[in-house]
Image (cartoon, rainbow, N blue to C red; front, side, top):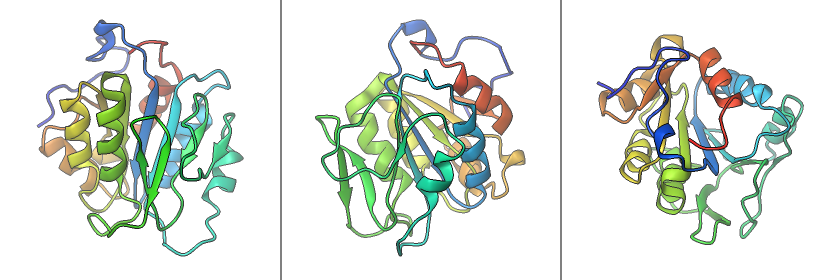
Length: 208
């Protein structure tokens, strides 16, 4: 079971009391996650300061129309980054089809064609684990609807490094296995419906 379950507008999140800035938001999802991702990105104000990195399980063959589709719903620039590209504040970086997307120690993007992880490339775990090691307590990780357990191990790593984890309420997920697994492994700091998650994200303060 998760360590904490939040009610809307309740206690400040774990980490809110440490005053550290949130510099990166990582979001992962699979089956049923696209609808929630659209809701989250549409809620972000143009002034949203943290960088955002997104992994969605997609067919490996390009072209992918995900960036184009998301850009129509988001006030922030949405890009499919190249390897070595700087992770920029106020920008949404979407993993290209068929590539793992990682965070390098100099806060640039790395792309990898290493073997699939949990049957997926890009892998949510790969992004979350690499981001946790670099951004530590300045990281917020969000896990959405999905049909396997990708992301649960990554969330555990985020928490181990002092970051904050949000998980979609399984009862609201089209495919609840992914968020449910994360909760069962104790990897969720807070459990939100998509609507509450969108409101909380849009209102994210300058510091967690």
